[in-house]
Length: 331
Ligand code: AHN
Ligand code: ZN
Image 1 (cartoon, rainbow, N blue to C red):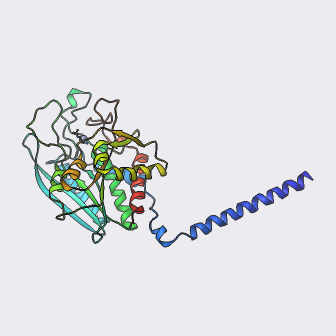
Image 2 (cartoon, rainbow, N blue to C red):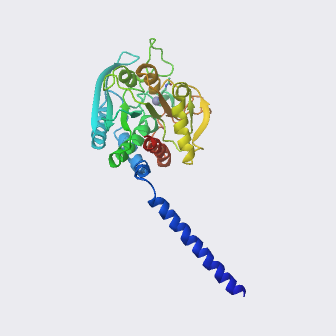
Image 3 (cartoon, helix red, strand yellow):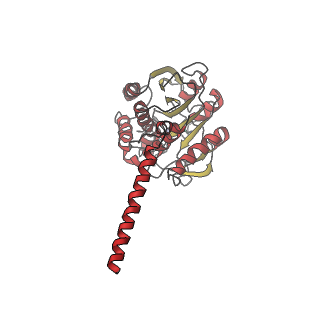
């Protein structure tokens, strides 16, 4: 009797499973064309990591050096392969010490005919001095900037590759700013002036297309350390609260609520500050800020430890997956 009963039970379970599977299939089949067009493609962590490493392999990408020039060629070639129209914006920036920096902002446009556009950005240059290194002897040396520079660009190159394989409904522009990190070194006095974000200052006043505006922008800065945590940076909340809500909301839905924290953090004069104040459309900053280090930034910040060994491909994928979900959700 018990045996008969358990066979019946097994049969019932099997039927239940069978029918729920059928339901699932129907659901998938029942996805409308519109819905499937708006399903984001799968982001590759390995590909993003290789894009970061390809940059650091050139050595520090400090303006006026051969490594900077070689990396520029690599970024132009790679982005050109994926985007529809590539723009190279060459300019000479003046540094805090009067040095003339031969610089170049790189812009890759996807579906340039579309009027509804999102801009994604990061800086591609690396800092000429490790002025926060623990060793005094290292503080004049240039840094690899694996996290500070290359991580954001690497994440965006993989986004670019995905955009080339499947088009979202909105137009996208990817901007790699130059000369972000040549700001006045710690303990050095310099004339009054805005010495960080020289590339974004230039682009915000003289965009690649006159009068260019995006619906909104997202800047990435230091998104590659395993312990990265992103809070609502002050200027991002001030100028782009709804964009913050969209991005952090999406990250939460994807299960990344332990990385994208719903808390406010202090404002940073980063590239997005100039876009908000000079270009006049909202851009938020996804930036790793820390309170325990004393600098406001991760422990590797502006030290020789900011190298490829401290890049976590899973963190790159968390950020990249969030960006794709935001982009493909736009109508
Ligand atoms: C300031 O410390 C004023 N800005 C830092 C922006 C930055 C440098 N992000 C990365 N490196
Ligand atoms: Zn920096």
